[in-house]
Amino acid sequence: MDPRPVGCDGLPQSWMQINPSIFREYDIRGVVDQDFDLEGVRRLGQAFAAYLLQEGIREAVVGWDSRASSPALRDAIIDGLTACGVDVLDIGEVTTPIFYFAYQHYGFSGGVMVTASHNPAEYNGFKLARGPSTIYGEAIQEVFRLWQQGDFPRGFGVVRREDPVPDYLAMLREKIQLDRWRPRVVVDCGNGTPSRFVHQVMDAFGVPAEYLYCTVDPTFPNHHPDPVVAENLQDLVRTVKRTQADLGIAFDGDGDRIGVVDNRGRILWGDRLMVLYWREILPRYPGAPGIVEVKCSQVLYDEIARLGGRPLFYKTGHSLIKAKMRELGAPFTGEMSGHMFFADEYFGYDDAFYAAGRLLRLMSRQARPLDQLLADVPELPSTPEVRIDCPDDRKFAVVERLKSRFRDELQLPVVDVDGVRVLYPEGWGLVRASNTQPALVARAEARTQSGLQHIVAQLEGELRRFPEVGPIHWGG
Image (cartoon, rainbow, N blue to C red; front, side, top):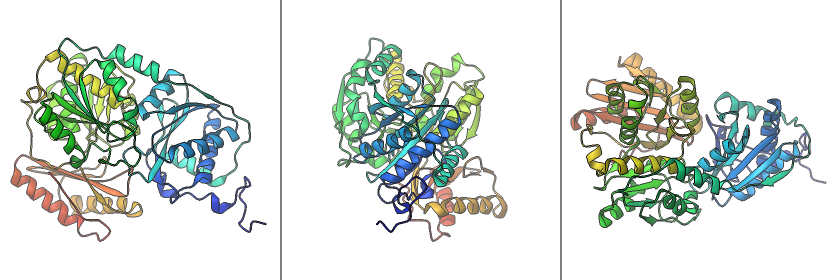
């Protein structure tokens, strides 16, 4: 006889462990076999099924990325869903945006995408969808409460399969039509899931392309598929320069974030890229709200205002921003990390393939190099977005203490919609808690290099007060 205590659904309790900290603000992520195991994931499928059934939803679409652990986790999550009577549409190995497309294309109101996006290879996770988008915040905590309670309905859901990729490619081909000038592009997928589809996507756009690391390898042997880290873009930079391409485009591990290198081999971070998109969009939507994620440059905020929009700072996080866009009726926004959300001609979710197409179309219509399109945009001294190790159970407390320190003790103005964006006479500095990793996220910008050095020195000095905060590498 197995001596381990048995849970309410007959599974030994030691097989049903899941780390509560992986239920994050807008998805569920952790280290496989450390933060959760297959029975914990099966139970998660049951908990999400119970959540959907409470809403009268009896079907769910399930997709999964190219990580080595994804097929087993897909099986476990589907087993949990169907054990509670929820029918499943398995759409196979896809990018997260293809999952979003299938979710809408097939008319579903519930779904699960198995992915850990840009996290290291040992991670995996789940994006849970209900209603118009993925759930976040309190809704994710409700799923965790259901997981804990374990009082699941019983049923016999069925599984069927569809391939949404042909319809997805046809949609891209219809929406992205270039003029006669076709930019030459170098593409870097970092061996992530976009590798499986990128040749077809670039063919749909009709652009000549050279491909770097565009075969799937879940060990990510060349570099990590995270285009927000400058180090991960260095091969792309070198190849753009060597081939004299018009631009370089990088995709993250699950295809919802874009990185861009201009024709001179310079990295365009998300805020400068958004200036180009807003210049195309805002003339058609005068007075539209322009959501500016807190990590973005003051230059973006000022440019939205100059174009006649209404800029406002808001939180980081794809689910949070998509919800805010729907609330305000915003036609577009994005994040420093390369999430781009188009609601003017698209569906409002973050699709890096579509964002690449919009950039290529924009360049094709203007027939000018990328560096010239941004030549009049001020390029202020700034740090890249940096991640600083900090335990999940301490990172929010550190941010709250910093907020109090800057606002109440140092008497500096702050924007506290997400973390603390400290406003200095010469610029600003930001520290916030990552919602996807045990880390803090920091960034700073100033009008002068000496001003930037002053802000960085003060941020670093305050962060070093906390022994739980890891080393800080600002990069450049």
